[in-house]
Image (cartoon, rainbow, N blue to C red):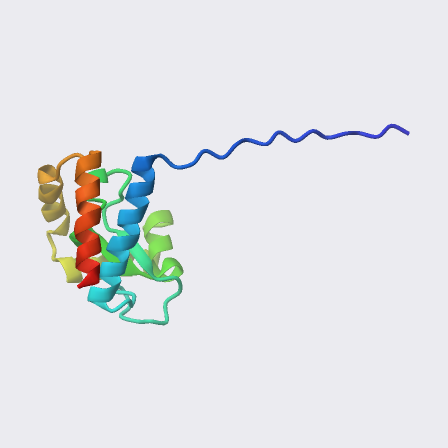
Length: 142
């Protein structure tokens, strides 16, 4: 009888870069501030009963990185009741409803307004990110 041995290669997990850690820190601070300002409930359904309420970027942060920290581009939404459907099946009735609510909350021309905001936003260099982090920390303290 032959015994098979299995060798598993372990990859060393790379720690986040300083920039990546800073962006994560800013994301958490901004979410805390928005949650405090808006009450921490799903803005799509006006409910605390929605599951896993978290920030949802109206225009995706991957396609619109300069809008990542724009409060007008962020809405609090439950994951499965709203957020999931807008990203994975835009034709689903839950996604259609979410987009209708976004238009009600942000206005009919919200995409144009966000595009204008994006055009004026600077690139996120380390100085900008550190300054933004300090400003958000101070705002959260007050």
